[in-house]
Image (cartoon, rainbow, N blue to C red; front, side, top):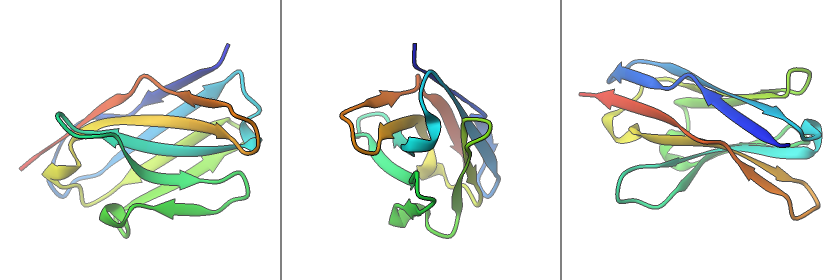
Length: 117
């Protein structure tokens, strides 16, 4: 059974930091691209950052220079360090695992991030 369990969300003031974690089980973690997405009320889910199985990272323009994605293949965990948070970063953040060559795609349950002004 595949599980992606996010943690680390919460309430923080603008300018503050949070670190999200996503612990994966039931998958061969090292051959999955791991991503963080977010969805604010009334908006579509959007990509925040991706860490590929090959070690590359990609970021949405709106988080470049503020957020950092990293992964620990030994712990089957992907992280999202979020600095200089803004109220517009408030959303439910979702972890995603996508197999590099098979049609396998998994989501976590989401963790709420709220940034107060």
